[in-house]
Length: 115
Length: 112
Image (cartoon, rainbow over all chains, first blue to last red; front, side, top):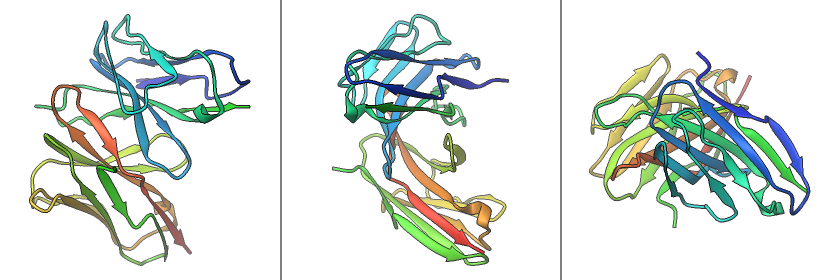
């Protein structure tokens, strides 16, 4: 059971470059999330999706875009990389919590540096 | 303005000590509170708390929620060096998205 898989694990970008962080889950979860974690900070929500075709902004969406064409995949795109986007990015997925005792499952993260 | 506040931010103890980590919150439409342990990679789930006064326990770790006073504590007894990690508290806001709002975490270091 793979759970939540993120690729790549590490990436260095130059300012102004673009890239897509991949996230896929094999648990048939409806809910998927992207977080960023800066040093010494908790996780901050970038975007989330409650199902295929539906996405919404989180706390820090500026500079990012997402899409959810399938239940399994939830890629995060950086169009014009900036040094402020240097961070560790986590993808997570979950069932609806109501009526469920399952928390969010996290991927192992993507460490991104913008130079 | 932080909705989830953890204290202390950092803690250094010796093996065998007992520690208490705190988490206070202020969110609308509270659904549940979760504790995670984060070592080098992804946060790993510890507890989910939805009801006041009911202690959740797993080995040397335990946690309890007070919905009236809006806080939770995580206790670790007889600490071991393997308990060294960042402990994250997160609150689930209802309203359909099941979004997690995280605190900044408590960095626990257990020295031999």
